[in-house]
Image (tube, rainbow, N blue to C red; front, side, top):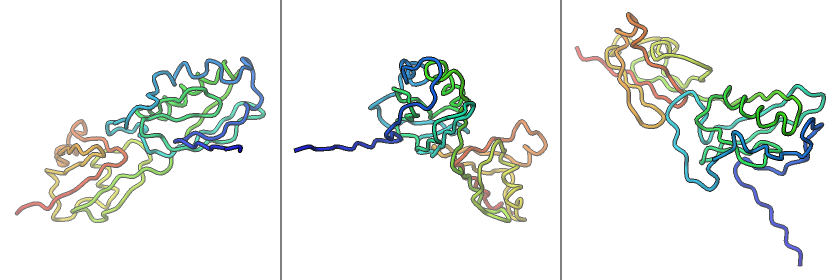
Length: 209
């Protein structure tokens, strides 16, 4: 009897041999010794603070360029322990807690020169959102496309209603932390404004008369 067991874990898929490898033709030899070191294989859920960095559960697509023949785009979801398993790398790589640019740089260092002479890595994420609700004119879920502050987010939601409490706006972070911001003061002094991150919920209360 021949039993075939197919194991699928996290981002891992069946990996073909590298396409057009350059220097270091032992595909993946030592490739996991950089960014993948200490990836926490078998560790529990990784907790990441509310930032614009990648988080467990984020869906990402890795594309490659810079060669006449490159690996096909690779899509996966970041595991709960914060790792991914890109093509041809022997060890998982920690992705959670890093910005997209930082992860792109680390992956390029993993591939060059161990597997390729040169390669460019580009990472794209699925849409990430934040929320603006309460006493704003257009309560909505909004796509996070980059750096934005609380006052800017409220303006993008149509600004405060006539009853909105601008002095005490709650920002509920994805990790459960609650920040309070005085938007009137922040408009006069931008240093008092707060950044918005994916998963944040901005709640404008009703002011008391």
